[in-house]
Every structure is written in structure tokens, then in C-alpha cells.
Length: 178
Image (cartoon, rainbow, N blue to C red; front, side, top):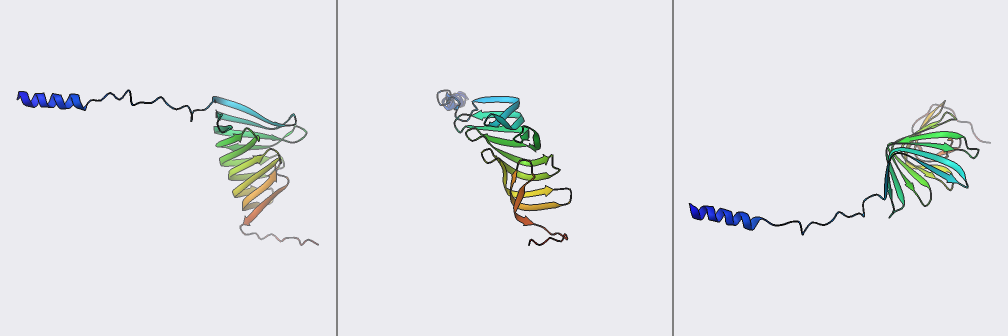
């Protein structure tokens, strides 16, 4: 019986290894430079606010100069006179800190003061051009119509928009251009 116990003890002790020297410190490469909760970011151009971005959570990464936002993102867009003209809501977004561009993702809804509502899953704000862009399915609801298509370009107020590849059917008669 003693040889069996001795053999079991030898196997137990030789099977134990100190893993502490094989463990590495966690890499800080994927860790955010800054984190914040209930955050506000102001995007501006030539000293005037173009958008105010609010989010439940914000993580800023230095290596790619990008800020990631989640836990409901809300954006107020301003016209050149400083009036809030449209309001965006999304589940998450990214801000390119070099260009001040914003990419809103998942359940994106934009309501404008002009009465137009835009629905999509992906929407970009081009700060330099002051344009809203999408390359995915979009739905625009106006007072008279509901329009769908793939791809969109618009001003932030949703008063001058274009759907690139419209889809759907309408009974509405179109006026011919002269």
C-alpha cells in the first residue's frame, strides 16, 4: 500500500507547476486612455458649435485617435446661427478626433425640426462638409410620405436630402420637369 501512496504523491508533486513566471502583465495597448460616464462632447468648426454629443459611456483611445460612445448616444446638430435643428439618437457611435466626424451605429433615428424623421442602422456625420451620409438602408418619414432606399446624403437639418437607390412602390403621381 505504501508504494501506491508514494507513487500518487510523486505524481501529484511533479504535476504541479509554478505558472507565475509564465504569466504576463496585461497589455495596455487595448485599454482606453480615458473613460467617462454620462459624457458630453462638443464638436465645433471655426468657433461655432456644430454638434453636441451625449453618451452614457465614453472610451477614448490614443493610438487610433478615436472615441467610442455607447449606452445610448444623443446628438444635437446646430445650424450656422447656433440653433439646434435636428436630434440624433443611436445605441453607439464613434468620433474621429482628427476630423471631428461621427459614425452613429445601431437603431439610429434623426428627428429634424422640419418634421422629417430618418431611420437607419448606420449614419455618418462629415464635419467638414456638414453632411449626413449613409450607405445602408434608410427610411425617411415626412408629413406626406415614407421613403426607403440604400444610401443617403443630407444636410443636418434634413431639409435637403437625396436617397441614392430608392426602393418601394408609390401610387403618387410625379410632376414632369419642364
